[in-house]
Length: 569
Image (cartoon, rainbow, N blue to C red; front, top):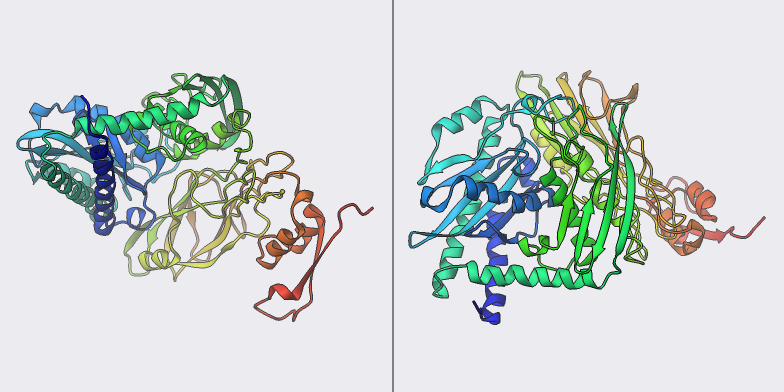
C-alpha cells in the first residue's frame, strides 16, 4: 500500500517525541538509582505484529536491541484475541529478552476502538530479583533469582496481586523493585495515550502501514551503506579476563556480501561454568549495534535496520549459551563485541577504526547493615575510557558501548552509609598514541561508621588491557582492591568496617605512534593531569616543566613549558 511520504515523516517525528515522553515518565517515576540515575533501561514502540518502529534516545543496546528481537515471544504467547485494554505483560526470561534475570521487560498492547494497533514496551534492570546478588558465582540460572515467564502483570487495568506478592517475597528491595515495575507500566501508558491521540488526529485506523515504510527506509539506508563497502571476509579475536583461571576468547568472521553482512562467532570459547555466559539474543543486540554504529550511525534504529545483519554463534558457546547456564554477568562478555567487530571491519572501513575501549561496564553491588540495624543494597555503575579514534582522542569515563551513566557520588552517599572519598580522572590510564585513549577514573569507597558490609565487583580488564592500534599503546588495566591486597573479580566479598575499596577503572587504547602527537597536545594533557610529566617524557618524547609555585593548588597553563626531545640521541 502506498503511503504519503510526508505523512511518514510527520508521524516518524511525532513518534520520536512520544518515545521521549515514555522514557521521561518512566525515569521520573522510577524508585531505583539504577533507572533514575544510570538510565539502565530502554523504551520502544512496536507495530501490531511486534516489529520495532522506533526507540527512545536513552537506553542500552543490550536492552533495546534484545527487546526488539524478543517482542515476538510476547506476540506469540498472547495473540490479540487473548488481550484487552488495560492488560500489561512482563517477563525476565534471559533467553527471550535481555539475557539476564535482573532485566525485566514490560509490554503494553495499545488498542484503538477495540482493535490492537501497537505495543509500547520498556526493559529495565531491577535493583534486585532474589537469588545471588549479580555476580558470576552461580553455576546455573536457577541460583540467580526469580525467573518470570511471559505473564500478565495487569489484567484489564487490575494488578495481578498474586504475582506482585510473589515478587515482593523473593527480592531484597521490594519497594524499589515493584516501584520500578509500576514506573515501567506508567511510561507505557503515557506512550500509549499519546499514540492513540496521534492516530485520531490523523484519522488513522492503523499504524502498520506507516510503520512498515519507516522500517523499510531504515533497511534501504543500511543496505545502501553496506553496498558501498568492499565484499570480503574479515576476522578478529580478543581475550577477556574470564572467571578466575578460565580465559574467554571471542572470535568473529565478518562476511560482507553485497548489501548484507554476516557475523559468525564460531571459534569463540565454549559456555562457561560460571555466570558470564551470553544468550544469542544479547549477542545479536550488541553485534547489530556495532555494525550500525560503525557503518551508518545516522540510520534511524528500528526492525528494518536489523534485516541486513545476520548473526550466528555455535549453540553451547559463550555467545549462545543453552539453559540452564548462569548468565547474571553476561555484560562482562557481551560488551566486548563492538570492539571485536570494529576491529574486524577496520580493513573494510579505512580511517574509521577505533582502538579497543574499556568495554565492560563496571558494576559494584554494595550490601550490608548500618549501625541501627537497617539493611541497605546499592548498585553502582562506573565506566572506563573509550579507545582513541583515527582523528580524535578517546572519550574519558564514557559508557561505551552500554550508554549508561555513572552513579553520582551524592546519590551513593544518600542511599547507603558509604563515603566516596575520591573521584578523579585516572592519570596515564589512556593508552599513549598520536591520539590518546580515553581515561578511566579513580574512586574509593569506605564505610560510614561501624557497619557490616560486602561488595560484589562485576569488573573486567584487570588482567588484559584495551589494545592500541597502529603503534598506539595499550590502555591501563583496571584495579579493584583494598590497601591490604586485590579483591576477586565477579564475586561477593565480606569487608571489615575500616576497609577502603579502590575502584580504578581501565583506560582505552591509543591510536598511532605517540611520537607523532602534537607537543602542544602533550603539554595540554600534562596541564590537565591526563598524563604525568614522566609519561610525557618517556612515552611522547616531550619534556614538560612546571615553573610555578610548587604549593599552588591551581596550576595555570602559562606556568608550564614544553620541549620536544624527539630525534635526540
